[in-house]
Image (cartoon, rainbow, N blue to C red):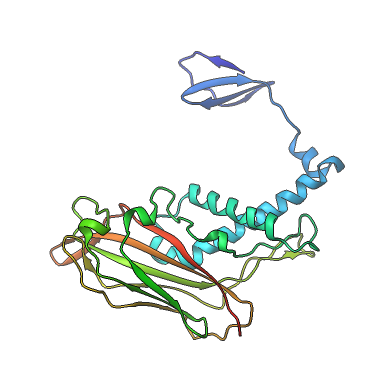
Length: 267
């Protein structure tokens, strides 16, 4: 590759030369690697195509996880970076924990303990912003997740953005099915859910200590009956607000949410 010095910013392909921008510089070079047509048809790329299908299944699963758990409240923290990170984690799970009988290109995408600690906002680690203690409990029927915070002192337990007067905690709870390969479509079926919810706390002051808050109960709507082996995922998040004239204005700074529970129901 060669660097191009010019007042014109070139991108794309001119003849046999490809121009790309890297670190503020225009780089010129020749196209390399196999063509898309060859990758999609040549016998020597058969395994590549199978891996592409599996990767697509993981990406689809990650997208639906965000829909189930973050879009209602945390749509502002959804980012391409964290979506890619979740896809990568699901891919690791798929490769490491697949049923040995499953064929390459058809290995199930699933929830797993490795997702615990995953950050829905790639920029903000939840435990770095909120470090107060809390207890968590899954109901006997598996249809609810209860978070019971301890006393919260913003001065020691939180990183509060400048100007914030209040905050809320959010508890997400979702049943998510495995995503399995469909031989008819040649793709992975989208995961399904028997229910999902995000339950928020009351507004709490971000400038003074809060005695033990009320428990936050995330209950699946309709109280679905879960089968043995059904999997659920729980999240805990935080968002900050500035009160002006009795209205709470969301600040969008330091929004964070992480996976705190991956649960397999047993009957």
